[in-house]
Image (cartoon, rainbow, N blue to C red; front, side, top):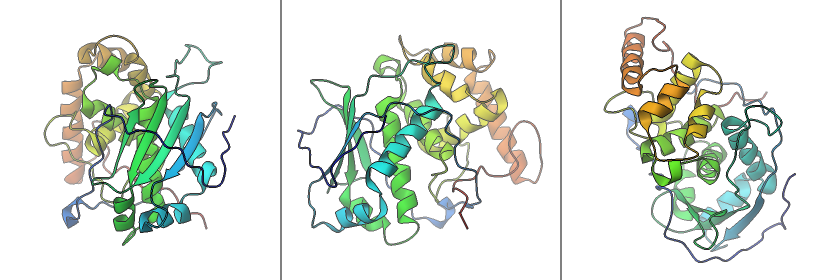
Length: 289
């Protein structure tokens, strides 16, 4: 089922304090850029029920509002990203084992001026109603170069993950939460042009760093690995050893991170081995002729 809305509906809600960590603007440093080879688009196996989708433009005269309306094709694009998220994080209700999803009933996209890029909140009275706030200032600034539509769809995809993922009842580390969101964005063919694979620091540094690591786990342990990780975060307090042990054949995440780092280093030196990909994971979808 696909929700339908008027051309430019307006839904006014009070901003709530409970939110996902905001996305930070990408670095403009040349060292942050990465190749942009092509990748096949996600194959959607199922059509999930789509929650009610709303759009609110706080300032129609803002340049960011105009850019958003020009590049995002309303319900078609928003509902397509909902399907991307649900297909990557959940199996069909008809499949076994049963894949339980959060009861998100509506998502309101709010375009308004604020510092940063985007963040997602749940209403205090009913957390099944989500609000995705996207900065009109960021939309205006990101329009100065690059693929505006690709970037906006990527931000939308990332934030929609926060509307549907599990978080170990609020105890899951933020780095894993954000990493899953960027993994979905990556798998949907919407990775940002400035993303790059790197393995400095800890595995749960979040965002694309963790997203690429999760993609490596998906390839190493098979399709559905990240889906299982998300499912393990449905109930109870977060236990990293248990979660990764169940989803990664008993291996510890710290050891997997070391193997991932070793593979990246080997790839940079021109080597090729089973511990990591020799080529960067693509970040842009294939262009249609």
